Image 1 (tube, rainbow, N blue to C red):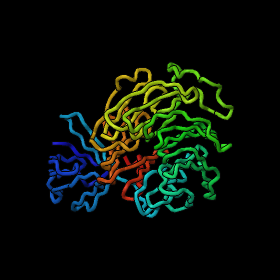
Image 2: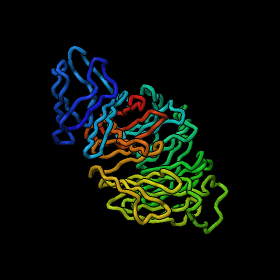
Image 3: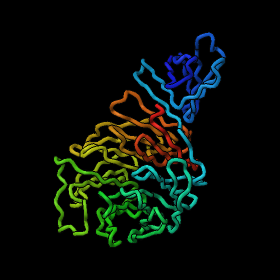
Image 4: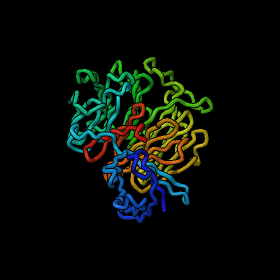
Length: 393
């Protein structure tokens, strides 16, 4: 048996139930519960990956809670399931491939396979701007630190910068020979980095709309890029040539490349010198830095590798929850948020003895996650943006 504790329930409703779980298909379980006699009318709860904890009982009536805590003391495991605070269904009509939230939390930007990229009000999903100019799909989009400018990359091999205020495209970068799959912004945004299906990562000067150089040419699609400040103990090497005066904020930075050929590559952003090359179990889809020496990278076969840049030969740990592709990783507080191709989306934090499961996507892939303060946004193949409120925990 397990112990199931709703986080907030009606005062007349017993907050502790003994449950027995019988696995079903697609991580679904029937939970048979035993209550105090006065609430014996409630005899079953169906827990699925998209459950919202609604408990029907008399005389208390409907009891609704946004989170539910399930623990298994014998296995020393515990999970808290958090339902969306709200869902935005009118932003896009098809699969949403990427999203981001502005630094002030007021705006969101997202791209979709319906061929559009849109800016919307983060509080209610109300449409503000449509960004038009890419040919074919837009693969990635993100706000600059100012929150007033958007960076996007598409299958047309173009990188574009947009004004969030009037939806105008102010800069277009050309040079890649394949679709751009991910981007990173260096410091406040004088320079940006792009990774492409053509196997190259490039550094760009936003002020002059020019390429400052090819950072890496690995002969394999670069699915994810990340830029992070390096710990003083890490040797980033020295550049072979004097860096351009147009390079701003690249010193003491690492560049991480998640590659299709099962390799995770790290190099000095300014020096272009290799720091390490790690071979994983499958294609790397995404990557992020947790600190000046710790990083995460996710693979197509469901592995999340945590590596220490100071000793990268052996992973610190490998997290494997399912064989579904790891589609996004985001540093969050003292932990991270991950999403996978089976619809799972979860938060791991060092100071918590349980995993927080973000529900709602069911079996549809969750492609990207963004945060602002205690709010978490996710985008999914089902064309929905979901907003979670951590205060609901």
